[in-house]
Amino acid sequence: MYQVRPAFGGNFMATIVTPERRPQMATVRPGAFEVPKPLPHREGEVVDVKVEFGCEKDALEVVEIVLDEREVHLEGARVIVSGGHGVGGQRASNS
Image (tube, rainbow, N blue to C red; front, side, top):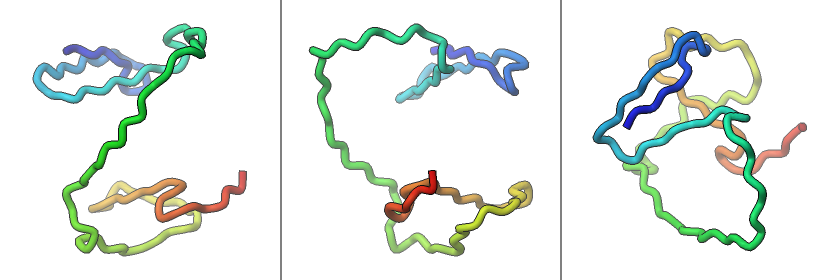
């Protein structure tokens, strides 16, 4: 399978070849396709899937929790761990 996508800020087009790997995933830029009209009679099926990440909960160690916004330089970091809203539970939003 060939995938063509903009790279380096759209300065050139990259062709990505993935002949033997599954699953494959692609992204589409907003506005690339016309939005289809809703079909209210259509239904989907919810399938519950159990996911295992291959590590024991006891094997994880919290080293530091950073709650404030500050300037961070990642260039010299050996390991980078990041999380967004919802990591560790619910949190009130200021927005």
